Image 1 (tube, one colour):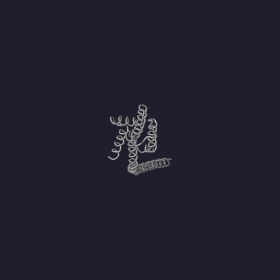
Image 2 (cartoon, rainbow, N blue to C red; image 1 turned 60 degrees about the vertical axis):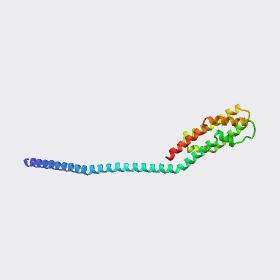
Image 3 (cartoon, helix red, strand yellow; image 1 turned 180 degrees about the horizontal axis):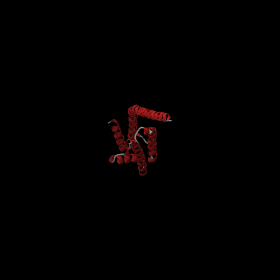
Image 4 (cartoon, one colour; image 1 turned 135 degrees about the vertical axis):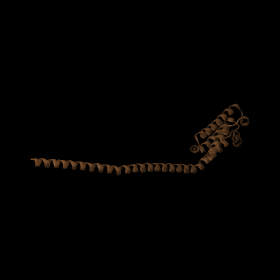
Length: 196
């Protein structure tokens, strides 16, 4: 029986040593795995971070380049739109349109209707230009057009002939700047901002 107990004791003591050795081997393998995985994970994370930053920077650069190219391509169209609206304002300047458009009757109301029709036709012809100019410039142009039309209607109610109407228009706008001149200045300032 002593031999059996001795054998069991040796068996268990060897087994516990085996278990301890096995446990130490697992612990060593776990630490070795962590030693390999941790640097790989850190390297992977750093590579991901730099690659992500690089992609973001590339996208940003491409977007800036695209917008710059688009701006360069659209500049001639915008400048042409500003030219057309400036020309429109010059053409509807009260003193100039009264000289350019001759009356077909002696009634001031008929003449004003002809002037308004001419202004509206030119405005409709240039209506698409609002796509290419700023909203402030567009408001200035439409405001100038409406103010000129209203002023023509007011003056036509106060006179009896086309000749009196024309004289009143010249007198009215010789002392003050016309709404079209203000709109022209706004257009010129915006064009200067584009070019510089």
